[in-house]
Length: 150
Image: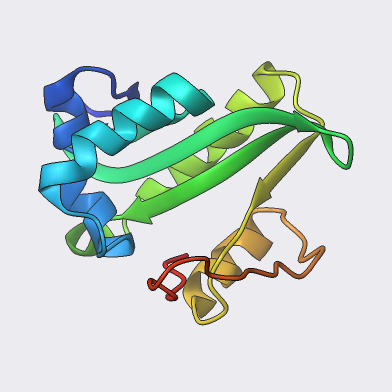
């Protein structure tokens, strides 16, 4: 079987990514995960992909292709996580290269992501992967949930 990147579309495929995504997004619950992913797919052209090794989810990414006045057509990486038990095996690099290729294949001019300021290991990975720190991201919580889960 080996390693492959798979677009997760069916309910069972999407649900198979929950435990890995939940490591990065602990506020999500399995009860609302499928509904949220489906809504993101329908309304925002969200893509959920997983790096599979022998049919096991090892890493997951969520992304959108969008366009803005500031950036032109761009690729936005919402989430990138390798499950804890599978880290340091090169899975993130394989998935990263696939994502960069998708951005190019989609004619994107730029590749963007936001990352929590405390995620130093991720920052090293992104810098090594060719990204630059190009701006500050500001936010204001408009409800009682004030934590940033990036």
